[in-house]
Amino acid sequence: MELLRTRPPKERADAARNRAAVLEAASRLFAEHGVEAVSLDQVAKEAGVGKGTLFRRFGDKSGLATALLDARERALQEAILSGPPPLGPGAPDAERRVAFVEAYLDYLLDHLALVRMSETSSPGARYRVGAYRFWHHHLTILLPEAEDPAYSAHALLAPLAAEQVTALLPELGPDRIRAGLARLARTCT
Amino acid sequence: MELLRTRPPKERADAARNRAAVLEAASRLFAEHGVEAVSLDQVAKEAGVGKGTLFRRFGDKSGLATALLDARERALQEAILSGPPPLGPGAPDAERRVAFVEAYLDYLLDHLALVRMSETSSPGARYRVGAYRFWHHHLTILLPEAEDPAYSAHALLAPLAAEQVTALLPELGPDRIRAGLARLARTCT
DNA sequence: GAGTGAAGGGGACTACAGTCCGGTTATGCC
DNA sequence: GGCATAACCGGACTGTAGTCCCCTTCACTC
Image (cartoon, rainbow over all chains, first blue to last red; front, side, top):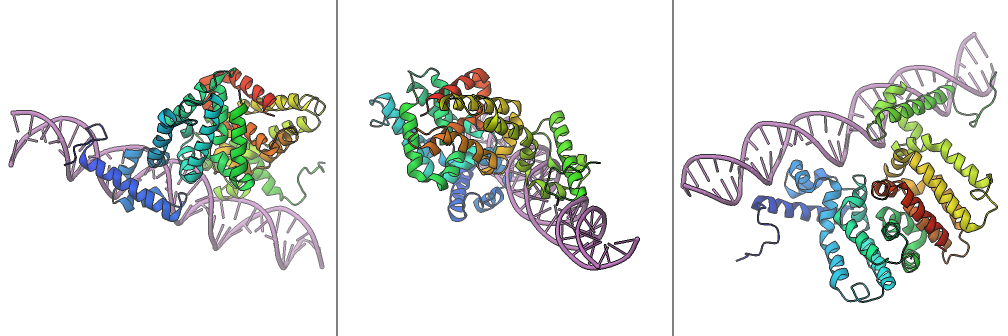
């Protein structure tokens, strides 16, 4: 018998079932038709729930995308907090910065359309979610010698916006982007 | 008698009249109620034209914003091409880069909501318009010693995205943003 | 296992961006 | 000045994000 509860114990059974159904339906539809081409009506219908339910659970389109990315995001955060260096603790700051931007770029390229949706539907979404705060805090800590670590961290995250990477990818290709980011991370004091 | 034609001679009189009416109405409504709160239906009604006309002329919401910003944008481009240094030609590259990011930030802070609308309604709009190409080309020229001038120019423009500045403004205030950008522009090789 | 309070469900509803096409008007030529 | 034609006009139409609120269903108590 399954007694393990990953969520706080107050989520009702029907709610959990619907949450899972929505995530699964969204994942399937996005994979099949592309993120852009799928409307939330379709997701709701495919999941067998009403539209109201979908919005109640996920707030808006960017919230749904964020929920779908949650697992991958957590994995990266784990690797940063307690994985092996240079991504995890133990390496010099500059190397950890480089490792971070490269790992984040990998994550981004793997899920570009979805991250883009999570950042762009709903204005300012990127900067509101907890994950951005996490990346920003991490980089701030790794920039103790900068004149304004908080600003430098934002400036290093700016070219990692999904919108920016999407626009630059056809022009420069992933390798130049990766190299440029690494240079930036190493030298940005 | 007015013989001066600023546009190529093929724009019909009614088209020109409607163009002006739309721009004036949009400008007035945005000033009065805020950019976010005004719908294009309202703009069309206020200008006394149909919706179809509005979209025919300006393509979409971001096109309308771009048209409203056109004059200010051109002024900045003029100053860069032929104004006095350090913004115009004559000063060392690093100083010109700093002058550019500061001047652009001023422009941005003056018209933040409008620029944001021009960049965010319609995905990828920021990178498609001619103006972005202009700024990018200008910075590329000013970064001859960078390992990848084209990428560095993009990276320096990234923290000048309206979305980013909007998010950082309440947290850091304009002065820290300005100082951080200037540092970045000076040292970004 | 029946009652009860609250959380959840769902679909009709609104508002808005963007499209389309039949009718209209300006312009250039005779 | 009249005519042909191409450009333009405008509002009805579509599809989508997001809201609202009444009804259902769960979980907890006795």
